[in-house]
Image (tube, rainbow, N blue to C red; front, side):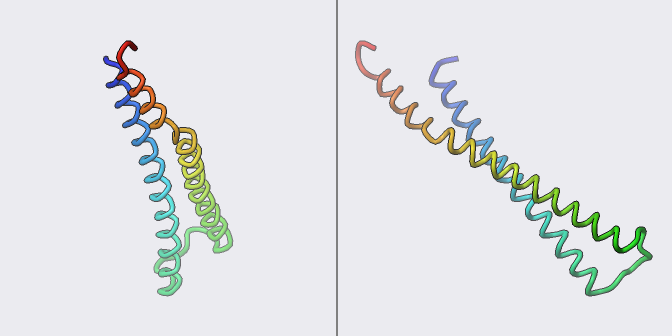
Length: 106
């Protein structure tokens, strides 16, 4: 594999990692919002079936699920921010390296 092909693959992989992390965080945030909206609509309509667990425990479980979903979204947002910061200079480095390789005698 040529050096330039490896660089192109690296750039594409970095782009895909950032897109994946952003998409995963967004999906988790949407999931959390969907759960809140579903609970709000259930509360407005009223219970349709007998509860399977006591109401107090049900609220605690839902709160825990919400916290976990938000935590997972935050982890992905933090990874996205860290990688984006660490990788922000890579295109400049590649451009400088390509310019140096393009010079005669190098």
